[in-house]
Image (cartoon, rainbow, N blue to C red; front, side, top):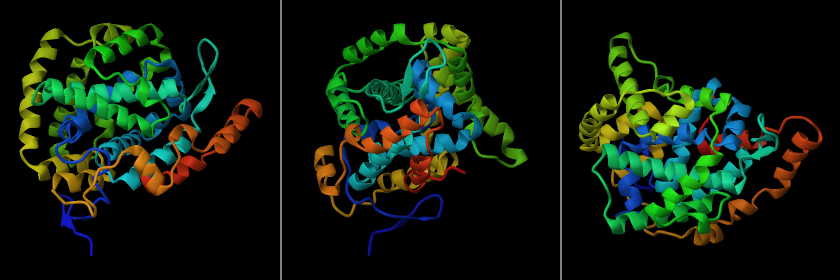
Length: 357
């Protein structure tokens, strides 16, 4: 019978099959397990991403961030957490289904001509590096501080490992802070503050949209939390980027939010159950992914795999090679027939990434 425990939600938590791709003692578990990750870091990541013209075209095409912001946040955080903490089979399945989900996000760019495809390797590289950089940045700014040189080297090597679950190549992942900076400098001239990018970024900074409803007497505290996260997220964004999209925040506010958030996160981090209670409010479907790690529930098999070993064991192709025929049919529907891409992948994803309603 599998080992079980109960988390702050009072629901039984199942152990993972194995340690996945990082495991105890890894810098990934250290950084991604801090409460900055599901809050400021994720918000920063999804906000900054919108400056890429192809990515924001895909986001605007689905309208999901506007129609169901809380669901979109929940599913995104669940996937991010699976990369770091889930067992190898579950992660392989999630990466595989995500290719089918992204196959729907194709079309013609609304500005400047050309097309977009959420499975394009360059688009996936932008998402990968923006996400991992944001996770580390928030940890350093509002958490325990900078990693050691060895830990940071391990962090970016781990980012390359995680890139094997995207359609981009792990060879394109920089392995140093300087390399990451060079990548973002390379991307800067390509970034655009288009009308749909501005709209998306301002919308995604409305933290209150992803928080659950609370009784009237809790609303002032909930509003204060949402405002604090928004301020903290903006404080991590370069001023040139803020100027591009019309986001304004005084330097004094940038400075004052740092000790507030550091103290708040440090207090939450004192108790795994407090962290899980926070996570439950933000993203209920992510709790079963993170809880075994936070509660010290060992996996059924105490091993760490490489992505290649996991794909061979569980029978999955590389994401860049997955569902080629299905993706071609989606492209036929959109570009040749002038119709809409099918929802098959999105529907199938509910079993893995959480429900859409």
